[in-house]
Image (cartoon, rainbow, N blue to C red):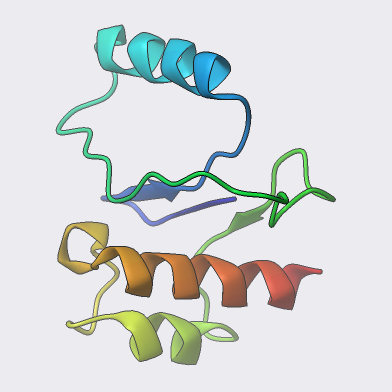
Length: 98
């Protein structure tokens, strides 16, 4: 699940630990990415977004209330989200897209 605006990206990735670690290493090594931060990691018994290979949601007028519900500011800034808020935001955006 991926959401972004003109300034920020927030992405949730699920998969085997070794595969996620390889992906993370390649993202860190990629000069196009700056200030990469991990908000949360956890083991899952079941994938939450198993039906998606990639789902995308950008801030729009239709989903503005969802962004506002989880934000501490009016604009979308994932650096201001805690892990619980980021997870809730991604869940609601995913459900809306589904």
